[in-house]
Length: 317
Ligand code: 5GP
Ligand code: MN
View 1 (spheres, helix red, strand yellow):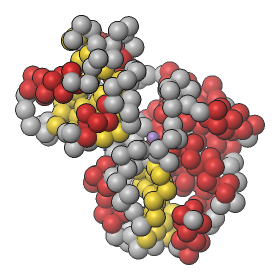
View 2 (cartoon, rainbow, N blue to C red):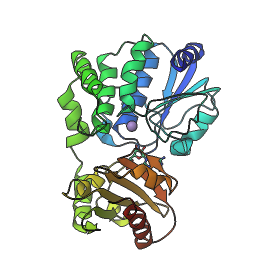
View 3 (cartoon, rainbow, N blue to C red):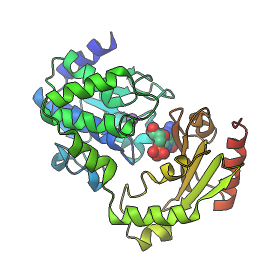
């Protein structure tokens, strides 16, 4: 079975690199650091490489040890919460150059890009997979690892409220609480507290929000200038897409973020029946049924908006 094979590879490896997707969210950060702390427990020489992340994750155990660059070659690379190598972006070489490649993920659109792929699309968070996998490998879920894992679960389920939540999600959360994890602390850090810059970006995006198709589509955006004007940092734009989604009658919320080198990063969310992952796949991206994204490199803001709205319209009832 894949999990036993992966454990054998871990046992044989001396040096390991842990990677996750660019613009890491709480699940990506939580899984990468849980895996890092777990491999430390096994006395591995392990690097976790995450070039940029939001400072809201600074409370996570292991953050001070995160590296921006690593060695040329590792015995083993483990990617977590990542659906394809494109999303490993600038640090893909660490993955490609490793002797053995492993991935653990929960995206339905996963491209099975590693030598060993453990993918469970039913799991609402990649961290929920690790809650089972680590003890299966006889790794103890310490309070530190538990804090990382609960962070992943809480972010990817929107605080236990998304439809992907299973009864196991609550069982695992209860179990992690027994390990001493401080749930309200995690919740406050990753879901409640926003930086001032993030607050200001939300304000700008909210003022610009427009409704289309009888209020079934919400659309908003932020520009490079907006980010400069509020001195935005990585992650300050997270969550803006939810503003439109939460309005009564909205089925799909679209959020565009202008990128440094041109083009737009697109975030889509749906409430009930539209599969936004299908829409993003058409633009070379992907994600989950109700939360997905892609990058559109060409076209003006109006072009990109119109393309996305035209595509989304076809899925509306
Ligand atoms: P977000 O809108 O928060 O950036 O991403 C929502 C979901 O879509 C996440 O699960 C993320 O992994 C996925 N996603 C976002 N952008 C991309 C992309 O460019 N390609 C793929 N394959 N998935 C993406
Ligand atoms: Mn995830």
